[in-house]
Amino acid sequence: MKMQSRFVPASPVRPGEVLHERFLTPGSITQDQLARALLVSRFSVNQIVNGRRAVTADMALRLAIVTSTTPEFWLNLQRNVDLYEARLKLADVIPRLEVLRKEKAPSELISDLDME
Image 1 (cartoon, helix red, strand yellow):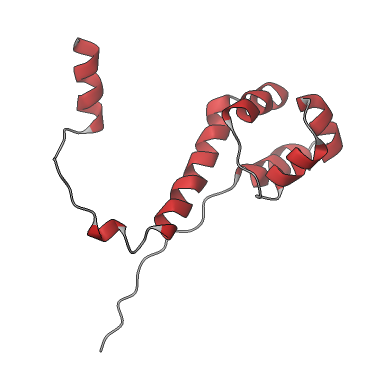
Image 2 (cartoon, helix red, strand yellow; image 1 turned 180 degrees about the vertical axis):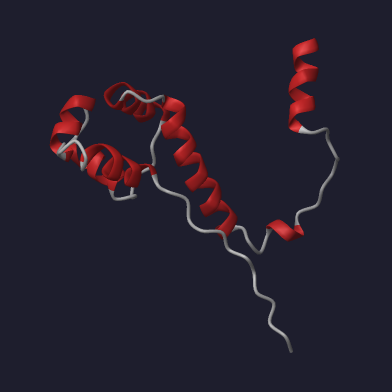
């Protein structure tokens, strides 16, 4: 019996990893300094940096201002992690899901909404 191997994509980069590697370390910024700048607890920052807490819309706005980025940057990083984890969790369920209706491509759906 031949075992079927399943392709598992590489884990996406977590927001906390980007925060640590691209902002804190190069700028010699401590988690405590970042927490004070964000007006949040050091515990919250530590949880994000260590991948134990997700970046919320609220935190994305704060991070965007403090790091001169955009909220979308932080939310997109988090979305990629969330989708990756959901795909792993639902790996056995997804193939069994039934398509009820074939819809247009997302770009077509958006253009249809623009016409209304």
